[in-house]
Image (cartoon, rainbow, N blue to C red; front, side, top):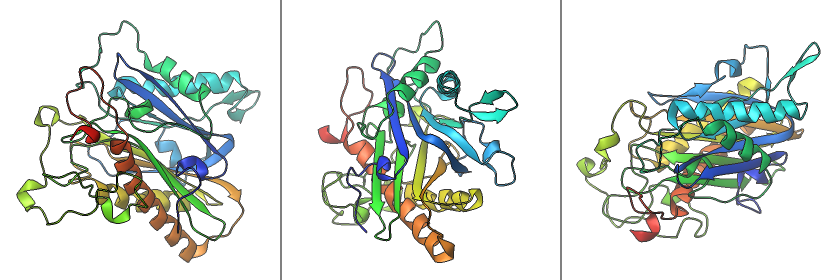
Length: 331
């Protein structure tokens, strides 16, 4: 397997991504969408999730396809980004048809970035407009690092960020990941610049720092920013996508498998203080019947992409005035 042309989730045929952020706010929103509704599912493993319309994504629910998926900063305030996306989609005539009415289906997930030094004294919730702007910016190419939902993200010891990666499975199917990495845990080995995800790096896509020269002591593998160690104070939220034709149940299995990527890239992961969540999206642009072995390969690729995307998000983070933590590039 090799990375796609862009090494972005948009290497998966049918998907577009848009970002919007406010530098003073130190926060933002990211939207994944497509020209047509797409199959989506979700799996939550963190202890403190913040979500919108995720119950709708269970395989036994009426609606199988969505119009967009939203990742946002802002904690519970950030869920309003989904409303801005829904407003813009409705204005464009998009949505699930109920008689003469169309209702855009826009599941969303948020991360906590309210203690990152940005100006949070707003008079009106800014996330509705950030969501609308992110949708308007949707396209095949987008930036990584301190952008979109990753604009205010942090990790245990470094700035977090928005990351993405892709894989070409070599059989006509592509898989990709998009993530806003904001975990309680660390993405780098204590005392070094090496990423936990280093064994899965392709080329030098996140700096080529290589593997650590020794295994850290167990007690050294958790070095957190304890001031934010509270329920709901962090979170890694992600989307994994494929152009294979999946059922909603198969997409949910893909989302479940992709959580392995978080565990490979963040130590510790899936904690009571994180709301770790993975959406899965399937465009069906490649009408391939995957079967059991095919679904295994897609889930494995999704986990690999997600681990790489987390490291890439941190690697591409850029410094800004008032940051509480340094960037990887400054470490």
